[in-house]
Image (cartoon, rainbow, N blue to C red):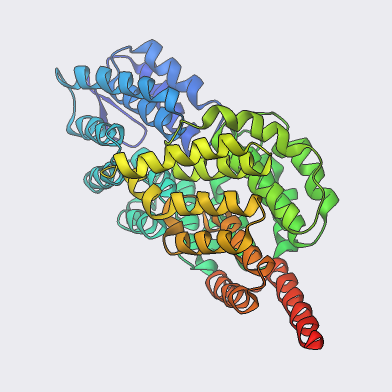
Length: 451
């Protein structure tokens, strides 16, 4: 008897219980729910030779960006490869092939392969979400948008339509179409109250268009939309903290940091990036942050050999350099340099060479107070910095450090030019830019008076 998933595609399984657990897995993954691994485990328990479930496990492991989980991803791939070698659908085999590319370090190839699968099976919302996840890690906003737009007409009457709208909203925001992004994101949340990605996409719009108060209102009025989440909920709290930071409400930022963003001292790189980038933003604004770097730096000392995701490595470097772990920061820099030299054929090796290594050097030099040299390194990384992954809002920490390095080195013209370019790309002058332009004006007036 043929079994089909919630989207109407065949699954090579015999148990309807496995199908039901699989559908719950996909639904939970779309909603960033903490229950996702529980549902996946139930699917595999009901059907141990469930190829697609093993593939999903492999993708989930690799997307966590932890070296110690690569072996688990490899085991999942090998198990799925054995299963699909006997009986499977073309869709299942395509998933396995894409996972294999990811394991070789060819993330771009894996994303392209999943995009081809999505074109062949356009109502497969899991494939759509996996493509967005991989392209997000590569900072490929245009690729995210093109992927979704190629299949969007197939989701008019689709069960996952709200979540697809949430994904589309984020892709629109990352490509600068803020009005359309806000409309799509609001619609997604209206239709699915657990669409945390859609809530987050609209928060991005508010961040990029300097609407901090609207952002605060948007998030505090509907915490239930991300309460069910895995660690993604910490990231949504991070967005709320950014709005308060823009308003100069530093006490509230620190409260959110302690009570929500670092409520659990996890070592997930996404949680580390939330924390490190928020702390350095506070310090750039002259806020004393106490001993909070120490907790992050102690965790990051264990990640100096990872080299899985450049975005993660840069935030580890930031925490180590800021937390007085200079030797560990240098060890991680050496790991990135080695990857750039020895893994040139991999996606992350290329990113390390073009953006990761110079950015890491700039972060270390900034922490050491060598601002002119830090500016030089960060500016060298800037043309390719989007490839390190994450969102515009997340990568803005590197932009701020570049601007502040120029300011501290007395390069007023360079700083002003970067601020204007940043504002042009964002779409609005925010509190950070206003404060820096005011500082430049004061410094230039002082210099003129001294002459």
